[in-house]
Amino acid sequence: MKHKKVSDKNAMIAKFTEEALRLGGGVSANQCHFIKAALAHGKTMEPAGRLAGANRECSHV
Image 1 (tube, rainbow, N blue to C red):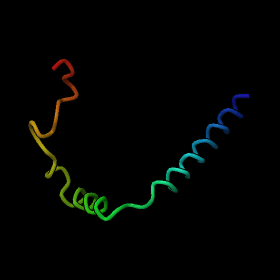
Image 2 (cartoon, rainbow, N blue to C red; image 1 turned 90 degrees about the vertical axis):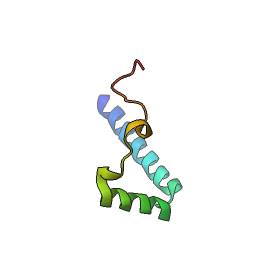
Image 3 (tube, helix red, strand yellow; image 1 turned 30 degrees about the vertical axis):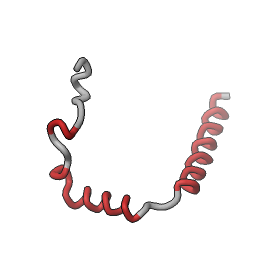
């Protein structure tokens, strides 16, 4: 019985993945530009300080 549940879950994952790819379309030129810039510059372009947002390790603030 457990094997059938796993195969059903895998089938649903495959179905939803295919549907998401179909409905999501391709990568836009703007998205491609951001990906290329991120690969070229790495973490040097990442914001620091207040621009980076709240520190996730310190949740009491």
